Amino acid sequence: MSEFQEVIAATKKETDKKCPNCGGVMNFDPSNGNMTCPYCDYSEEVIDDSSPAVEIDMKEAEDKGNHDWGVATKTVNCKNCGAQSIYDALEIASVCPYCGSNHVMEEKGVKTLAPDGVVTFEVTAQQAGDMFSSWLNKKWFCPTPAKQSAKPERFKGVYIPNWVFDANSRSFYTAQAGVSKTRKKADGKTETYIQYHGVRGSHRKEFDDFIQIGSNRYDKNTLRAIEPFDTANNKAYKPEYIAGFSAERYSIGLNDAWEEARRRMENVIDDEITSKIRTKENASTVKDLNVKTTFSDVKFKYLLLPIWISSFVFNGKTYEFMVNGQTGKVSGYTPVDKVKVAIVVVVVIVIIAIIVYFMNR
Image 1 (cartoon, rainbow, N blue to C red):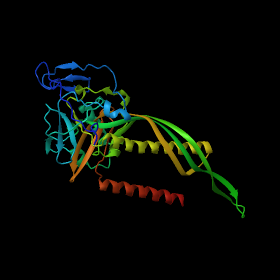
Image 2: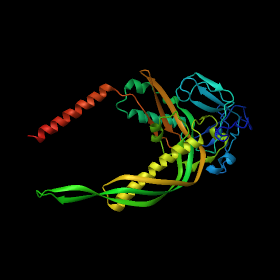
Image 3: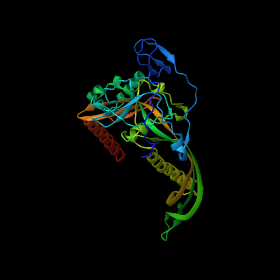
Image 4: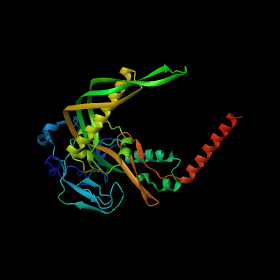
């Protein structure tokens, strides 16, 4: 593993976030973007130069990667679900923000890569709880006891690691485009058939802020469901922005993240080329698509994105929920009440039977 992928976070400005009024540890407040003391309510503005994270050329990653968290940190490992989170060295972490377990231990000597930028929280814990409650109440198939066991006040703010890529691509392709035709058969009836012909061409695509998650522990469908994040509105990393929140340590390194992002980009390109052929050739179907793509000017930045996380256990199974900390969009899985499902199925069958009965009269 390269020095860039895992480096020891430098330690400086360890007391940056101490309240000058009472000495307590200050937190970042999403409601106003200030640093606020939870003990005496002292508040001060975070100096914001409005500059976003600097994008780094992949070829120069070893030399230009930012290796400094700007504050002493510690890594806490959950012995229940395996999640690793980055905390301020002054913060006490006794509960895992992901599964709620209190079986957490500080890991000594763990190397951590500092982020280039942060998309800060704009949704407060209270707002996240309200949005979650509204979302859950609309889940008609979710059992009532399950809804009652989900506690919106238990949401934990977490910054998740993401590699964000820019890239230019150029593709050359060949394919068979199928055009629908009609013809008369010997018996005089008309039939529709597909006539294929070969096509070839080129395609260019620019990718800007293509997000690739840097963690293995999340359900990708749940995370995709709370997108998008406005990554263009990121701020160059400052330790003040993550004060009071935990930041998960990335478990997918830069090179592996780029390989996965590249595969996803190629899928996007394949879809665009297929659509392009359908339109240009007036084709109803496309087969035997062969695409050769090269990428250039690949740049990246390592961003922390904000989510509120909560979970509850129902009938021995853990259900996890996420709220986008920037937009408030909610996603997650809920248990299903089989009785309610059965009722709906029966009602649908009855309605269909009635419709069929009257249609056949």
